[in-house]
Length: 308
Ligand code: GLU
Image (cartoon, rainbow, N blue to C red):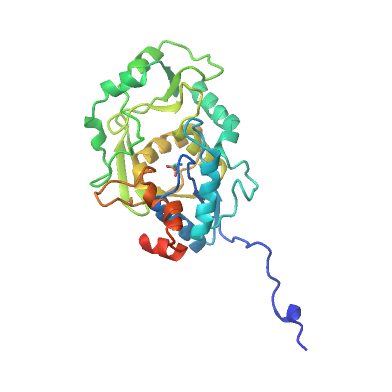
């Protein structure tokens, strides 16, 4: 009689990752995930696994007006259904918890205080309308190359109205609430990074984007600040995400430098478009993983739709 336990190596209860690669999936629970998200997350997962690295799932539920707990639960379930897994996250825990942005406010506040102390951000009283009016289009052509449009949620180019005023006002603020806080970009400076999918990217601060918001007037940390803090504290070595965020990467590189954080590697995935060439958005509910699953497709069939 053979005793299997003598001949087979013990099965580890969880897989031990053997490289320093750390990637992340960073969905926002503002709607159901669609095919575009699925393709990006599939790529992120594949790159982490190929590298023998770890994958973190971060719930980017920063915006209380748009995030819903039921979408957060649905996104985890849909990604697992599709065939993805992760090593750290809100549902599985991990050494760098919490993995839910709404529980990380103190970390973002620390970063904001440091930026205030260093004079790199200033308060801005301009309304959304003032900025939109001053920003009418030409800036948005960008340097990202053909086929890359500004992300729909990309902020308009700020003309610098309050930057000029801020020069004279010492920043004694202890809390950010009530005003937008903007990062002062180094006008004319080129931000260059090598994208692992799309090659060399060059953006010029002050031309391709203006002073951007790091803390919102409604007292919510802005996406740019939260993502830089989290990628650094979660020790992310490679960021895989959609090409709509290329310009945001340039902004984030500036924030990383200002906060003394390393810049991870970047891989920006091509965007999935609908039949009319429009980038998929959460309004394309019929292409959500939920709807595709409800229509009877298997995970393999859904993966085949984006070529996996
Ligand atoms: N949470 C963002 C989104 O769902 C992605 C952020 C990122 O990958 O940096 O669009």
